[in-house]
Length: 128
Image (tube, rainbow, N blue to C red):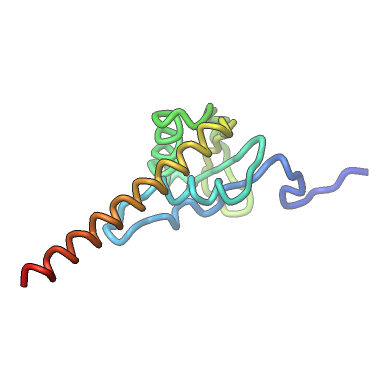
């Protein structure tokens, strides 16, 4: 007999609480949600937001599409009977190779930035 569970399927992962990925400026940073996804590979990711955070869900969907990280489908908008909020949900079918390449590129960029920062600090200390 089937049962109701909290996504007990290893091939489907929810990226939950994406509204928490807000940086100090108060803006949503979709890269934080992408990093969450990279931590657990899945055939499908789902994410949803209530109406009051709709722009955050739209931003994540746009980021995934613009960076060619897979296909995103907006599934629908329904009333959550538990909270009374309207929810919009998306399904992301990731391109695993693109996701890996994106992660590697971001790591490389951060490493180079750190090296430049170190070289700049070293050069400044030598010239003093």
